[in-house]
Image (cartoon, rainbow, N blue to C red; front, side, top):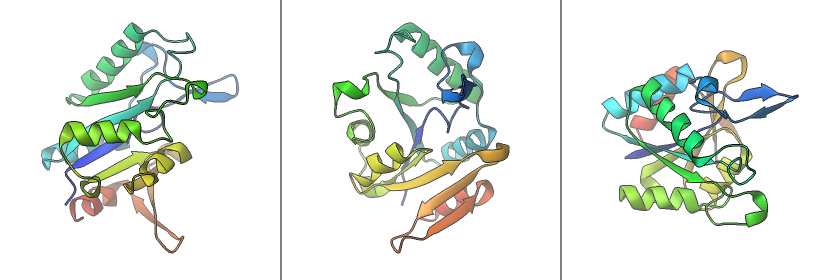
Length: 179
């Protein structure tokens, strides 16, 4: 039985910002746009009694592009728009710091599991990048890859035989709650 779903923040809960031919995290409250597919899923999970949390790398803090105060404002805006209460678990380190909490290392996920008092088998992590998948894989956690191309939402589950099971936004809630 799944008791907790962990979401990556940028590219999953909120939309990424496209600037200078690349994607980046929002750097101000005015740039926050919530992914409607994930919004609906989060609300359904909470109503079903499943806890949610967010694990996010935020190297922009170490790089001096975002302050801790701005990050707190952005996270509070996400909570306000969603109308939900959950915790953000944040790694503010950069790649060169080689910390244990920065995904693809599993430190953030382990912090969340400990805080919620659940086992790895009772958790699913939803992310949009290889580093998210690797963080989950490093501790044997189930992982769903979220792809939001064309404004839709497709979830991809890697199967042991190397194939992928695609779940539409409508089916992912049912799949999670039947585990």
